[in-house]
Length: 405
Image (cartoon, rainbow, N blue to C red; front, side):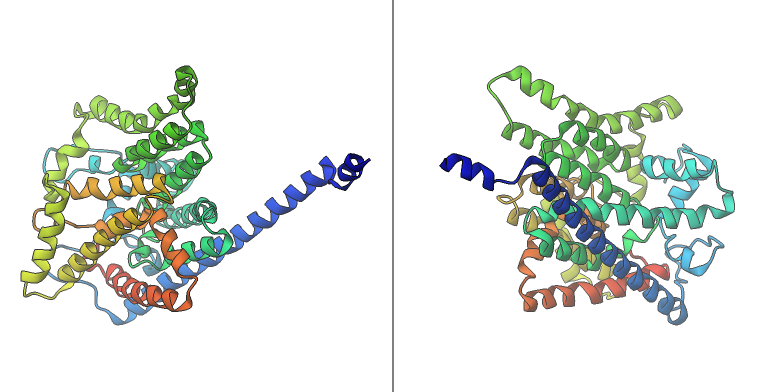
């Protein structure tokens, strides 16, 4: 009789299913609202800064380099800086090999492939606008798996703050630029989220796209192996059947190398051309030490110095945060560590941490502990006070073609 009463108090299967659906619907609604808010804040900051910068700051006119004129609306043009020109050119003309210095093959193909596909249905004169709008759409969608990833570590408050801090980060304006940051954030976030759920097929499939986007995409193999070890069984056949999708991750890189071999006879062409940009092999520790030495010894306080300082301190920040999350998120930690060390091992001799502030931007697991700490309003205010002014300053300089890369 007691068992009968107990069983009668339990919700029926249809009621349980309905409760689960309501919970999922509520969670996804929260996710969409939080992503939309973070996206709106990000775009509002960028375009407000762009308008003010265009009206008040003269465009760079020095002799170090010549800004490129894209001949489009100023607010579209504001997102078309530096590497954006390479992606646009690849979309229009394909890859080329001239053997004379900087080459387009240094830039991985997934993003320009998306732009090239668009040219099948849109006129060429709309490519600039489409590239900006596509990047906006990719970034908004990328915020969704980041939210889901962060949600696992502290519910909606932590997920909300993770998105906010990501959008306020000093170099977050690169999510507005026609660069691969937004696309890499999307595919890497999906892959890491899939690994946390032991969905190896999805992780491998998206990992393929990740290594087609940037060379650091192959580093997703590290968290893949860690999760596979956690899920190990005594039956090695089960482990092999479960883990085979790991081969898909480097397959993206292999596919690009195969194309370069077929087209130019240079499967490692993307590495060969790095010398034209001044990249040399060095130890990551050497890169960091030399960057601090530069900051101490140089007497010049120009934009190059400012970017050197930002790149240096954010590199150290990323390494520290990767240590912080080792125990709570070994998958994110392993990926972040490797993704910081890889470019440090090929720095520019005169600027060994060049672009590192941009490279660490997409390592979203590093923002989660800060989002947890930011439940304290004073800590949150300190983080925002450090992030936002730097973000605004660098975004303004970026829009006006100063050396912010």
